[in-house]
Length: 321
Length: 285
Image (cartoon, rainbow over all chains, first blue to last red; front, side, top):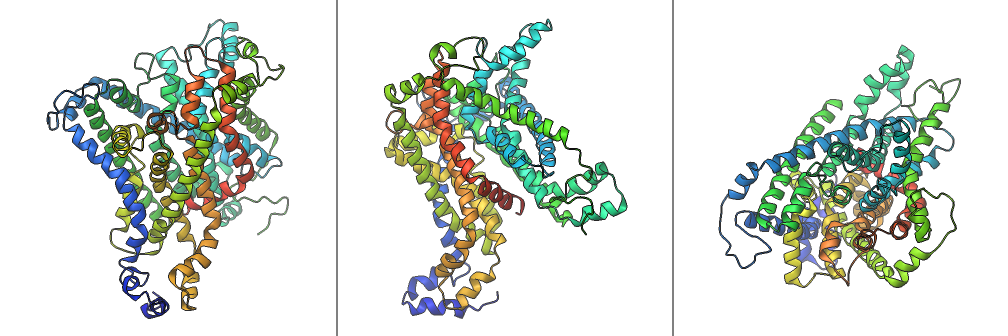
């Protein structure tokens, strides 16, 4: 510290608030940060911890919301065990992982490509950026509604134009939302449409913060642009890449509006991800205990994932520095 | 070292510039990203007949039929103002409260700092659907169901982790000696914070506020289950009016226009702050 305790406390003492201020005020460097954080921590505790404890309690009992007259029986870890033995749970987990990996992978490469194109300072490019960002600005609900309309048989643009082309080629209509495999890929497509702009924005920011010197050195050495990309741009972009990928992975894992509005998990259970499975269990079958156990498992998965990501991120950035 | 033939702003730009295909690619991307939205907006201005025809009608006589239905018959402006109140209030509270927490995390080196910061983030990891039932029960006992106050409290808590994480990065960017010299000159901590740190932080706080406001404006899951008549915000209202037994596409379009108009206006006006703000906070962590 560059200034002594005395210089900070002196003015506040002069104000005559010595009692409280010297105990909890800025001069007490051990306690003061907690004073500053208290409102945030209290609110998060009240809204965050209570549902968590409640979920723990419910998950260890047998509560069906539609049958409140049933006695609440303590069942220990039964709910978790039942879930692990439930093939529907594993199906939903697999769907969620495939959806997340596919969507984030495609979004990353498309976003990176766009960000690189935007590095060329062309005329009119700032104007184009607004158009490119539109899907990300729309409420997820609206994005889902728009595409539900686009793919609606007999009404949407996609079914009319793309369907027209495939009919002319003799393939017939594409069952965008009615075939299990196609419906799943349609959802991935809409997620990519909605969130590639986000990747683009984050990676553009990362590219803007790369220093100039390595490129000049590479130019003197006569390195080709492909080589420059892999040996300079990619390593220096790594922090931005990791942050963008972490945020997108966490959000793709929890995708809700998109799936609920476009397919409601169907046809069959082809697009039933964990979040949809959870919604059905808790809010359609009112099996609160099973839903609580499932939500705790989901939370564990997300925490472990982001913990690993943050670890990787820290070690990689330390190496880079 | 300056290049003799041309100058480019950015270091990551390729050396050879052949631009026509870039324009083609970017124009295509713009079309793909913009046309679906444009089409739905256009549908909002159609009358029932042209909106429900199977052949897309790119040229039509504009009609305000759907807007009339939503605004006059359904009174959607009430939901609109609910949304305005809830998103403004929750943005104000979460940014004001979260600012101090971020400041503490960025400026003080206390035991458990990384744990606190990670715990704050984990609050964002719970899937909304997962906390819905306990929150519903709590709101029911506290009498907060279907009230704007309840939604404001909930959204404030929901946005806090985001605010704290964004602002912590920004505070780290501001050198600590500015405040220190103000305090040496005799200012109290709070005076130094208000006169020195806060003005420097204003651009970042603005960007964060815009983001938080958009997130609150867009929130759907909680709004659907925690409100019914009095406090219903735009997203559940739009869901209710645009998806039913028989879908009226022009009503859907008009609803989309009403919910997105403030967003689009906002982003057009504040594009620069939004982008520069985002690039600072997330990358320089």
